[in-house]
Length: 257
Image 1 (cartoon, rainbow, N blue to C red):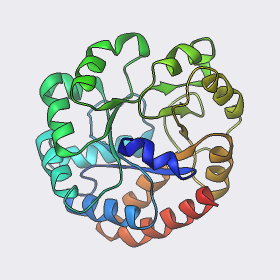
Image 2: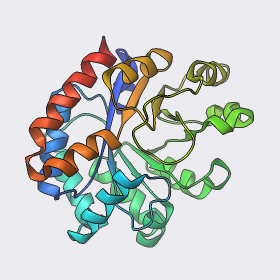
Image 3: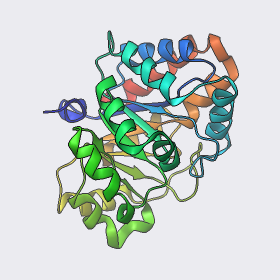
């Protein structure tokens, strides 16, 4: 059983997201360690991109701050190698196709796997265009994690049948960001997935409160939170470790209850 599967093996999973290098890589390292200590089951690491089309203003801002601070893909890969000396939770990169293309697909995926990354989410690559990435990911034993949106209804079974690692269920249409309510019938999406796959499913986009996280995890295998955490980091900067630690603790308690 790989690390991603183990993250879901003992119950519902809480999955936080942060942008590498916001406000700097040293703080990102402290944040990752704090989240792992508080019970995060898997952590998504965003590689900043200058045109993150799936992101709302909160994560777009984090990407721009990280890039202005001089973060590069090479620096992030070295950062992950250092993290792996004492962090054992599964780590997944979330980024965009151009980041991988510009680095070189084979080179990027090989170096990510060697650094200790367990999976890859490419937010702008549709299922039909993923084969060139999938072949390389399979070669280096890295899970290429699919995203399933509410509009994917007729395609859900097709995507789920080929899924690796876990399935990222997009709770709402549009870009990432905090939402006051989530109205998508997650249970119905999960039932369609379960007809063809036993790969774990986690729900993301819009979750910000313990109540929302608990509700989404109850209908699936876990909850993913990004913008709400990134907003705390934006507010507190290098002093964000304590507030993020407290927030993640509360979210883990809700999801693991």
